[in-house]
Length: 175
Image (cartoon, rainbow, N blue to C red):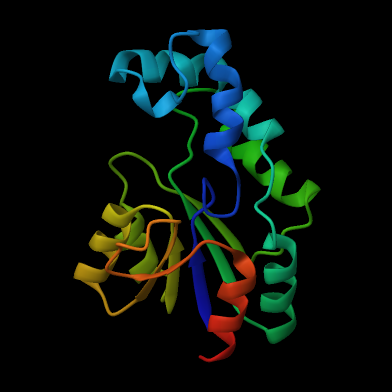
């Protein structure tokens, strides 16, 4: 089985980590998602390296990836992270995964104008893709037969949803 997995807010607490920096940037905001597009890009230019370096894993991630490794599943991270808004994000991402001993076979960075996650998932013969964003999963599901799982607390999703990695392990066991 080949699993395609997103990083931000899927295996990491990116929003929680980023929002620790928002008051340094502009204390009139509580969530960096509320920034205008220009302010959002300015925020990323200033703080993205720190966010990537200081991010934390979601609970159960290490156990899930150890389970996947022991079962012989192939793990491919497909992330929208790239070096556009701050230098060395690719390098810092790899270092973060290595530092946290997160097993994976491949790390693919989605590049603007060079394929999106749906094309990359198809190219890599993904069986199941796990992401926190409904719109990303919509693109993957509409262009392939890849099973999509959404990591979210929102139970209104059209996809199988989980809000923790322990339940994902149990679900994957049934496959």
